[in-house]
Length: 284
Image 1 (tube, rainbow, N blue to C red):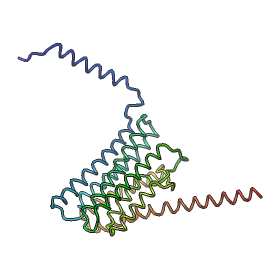
Image 2 (image 1 turned 90 degrees about the vertical axis):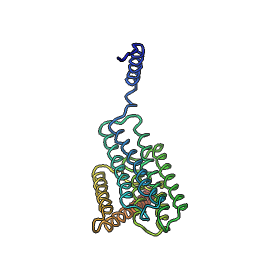
Image 3 (image 1 turned 60 degrees about the vertical axis):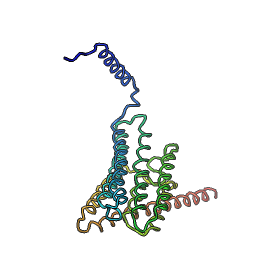
Image 4 (image 1 turned 180 degrees about the vertical axis):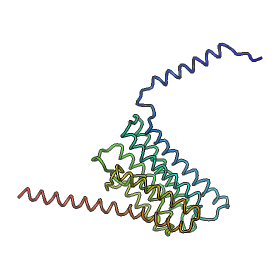
């Protein structure tokens, strides 16, 4: 026969009631919205990308059970998770504009982006520097530090500056993260790979303006992300032509990263000279 202490039961019920009252008293601005849930999905994907990079690539290499270099399946899983994080990051902004976002929305977005597009790709670079035969681990680690610092500075600047609507200043961190990973997957020699990653880190903290993915551009970004996932799956499953398909996708990603700043800089220079000519004509 079980004896229940009525005083203990009363105390437990009272504690639960007080907790429910405290939750009910929370202001609506601190409760999670649908957009916040998508942002948390972004953070989860970034963390799991680090997990798969560790357990599937780094640990087998250190234990001597790997086949050398980056494991296809594990690397593909890690990069796919980063791509999924970028999808969450794309849709949380769209949902926040259509519905609502809590007062924590901006902070949650920055913290999640730091995990998925700062820590995860930087850690991917570090592991690449350890497992690749022609890489130098210390140089790769220093390069990864630059990537993290670039993302931190970019997110901090984004939080405290106001730009004209529709543009980012500096390469967006999801785009930068995917470009960093693409450079690694291209399997270029060590020095050009490091130089390209340093260039990407610089673009993230530069003043080059990038368009925000809205409307048709958001749809194109989403479709490109799905295509990239397909290329990774084909590569990981050793589908005939999968390696060439992945290389082509990575090359296109890197080409876009190089072309967009050129167009933006050209447009900015043309605008400067146009304004200068108009000012001279007005002065006359």
